[in-house]
Every structure is written in C-alpha cells, then in structure tokens.
Image (cartoon, rainbow, N blue to C red):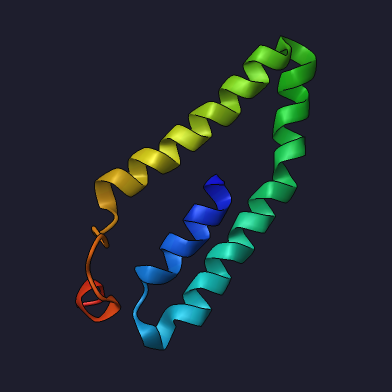
Length: 85
C-alpha cells in the first residue's frame, strides 16, 4: 500500500514536461535501494535479531513519511497545473 501510494503521489509533484523522466528515475532508485536492502538487513538480522531488523525498516519508512510531510507540496483538491507552479 505504501509503495503504490508513493508512486501515485510522485507523479503529481513533477511538472508535465519532466514527469516521465523524474518518475522513472525515482522508481529506478527505489529498485536499486531495494536491491541493496539484503546487504544491510541480513547482517542486522544475524547480529541483533528480527526485532532490530524490523526497527531499521520502520525507521526508514518514518524518514520517508516525515520527508513527504515536511517538504512535499499539498496536492489535495488542486489540479496538476496548480501543483506544478
């Protein structure tokens, strides 16, 4: 659910002329970071256990949530043209 909502939101904040490139770049970086996660999470799992591993994941999600809450433009009830000004 989080991933779907993020991908829907990210295309709304880019201007039309850059939307495909920007959304594609963001998605590609998302896939690269997903590919790196086993190299980060498996050592955490082995050394400190599943609780710590899920805490790392939860902290990463909270960072994204706070980033969007603090820096993303409000898109509720606004047209794409108004959001991209």
